[in-house]
Length: 383
Ligand SMILES: *[C@@H]1O[C@H](CO)[C@@H](O)[C@H](O)[C@H]1NC(C)=O
Image (cartoon, rainbow, N blue to C red; front, top):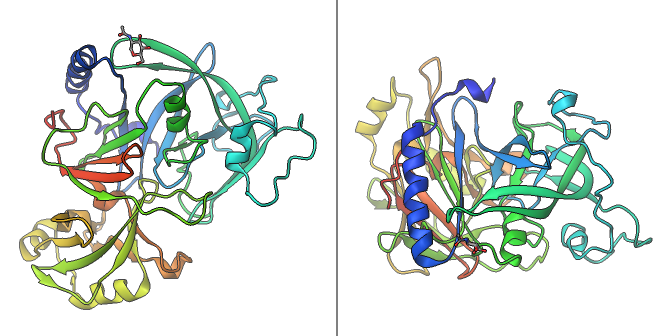
């Protein structure tokens, strides 16, 4: 499927109105943000993406947005195994390899055994995704032109992966995308790199529309003054895997408490669906979402599922039926909350795209918290 045919992004005018509002705010606050238009949907595409320009002259790469990983990478003409892009659209390294002594290299490689023997060696990376897809390549550094919302065009040298060996077991990376935009809070993410250059606050947010499209932003200017519910990000014991993990949360269904309690949940825009561990999943299935003819029947028959974050007061994450059910092309209704244990996620619970729709979701690495608010992601109405 070609994502360019999905055609459900924010109407042109609205997006530019939104940028205009942002620039007005930037001038007032002397801080900056960066905004991207998102395309894609949960079903049938299964991912959301943005265009990122790289190089001089710049070339645009369509990247899957993934808050579940740090490293941004693009398909690399090295030559390339498992590349889906035609060769002329793959990224060509040009003597701009990051060396393995570079601190960013250590940030992407496993800690106890730094494989850097010769300091002038290239910096190899390997990322594996939850769906067993992977990318292997080298770290490069190139100019990434970005327009700040105060009107300034920056040309930062940023490090990212040049992926020359990809495996696609699941849907990650998606067929038409050139790679992944890693939005995790590790030091190697583009977000962290822009933050250490003093350009933006270490904050990223997205608004994924249930009708497709939406917007993504770096920086803290879009955080509404009120209406956002916050919960702390749990500190991970592993320094390498910096996921946006929250919790514990208890599940309510149809206004009633359920046996599902104390869930730790990772917010992951790189996952199309939501995954619960098998115990929580079984409890949900036992609550009985039955087959219905249309999403309308379903929504009129179901109250939302609610996740209540017990350590932060009044922090409720509402999951309306549209955010946990899928109606297929054939009219079948499927549960969009899957058993993660079945795909090897173990006890990890993931809040994926389906449950993140029609919300402004903010990952605030400055204050180590995640926030959300209901929003119309087709419009800039959240301002
Ligand atoms: C925009 O913001 C950047 C980063 O904060 C700053 O370097 C630049 O001078 C600003 N430009 C304007 C026109 O204020």
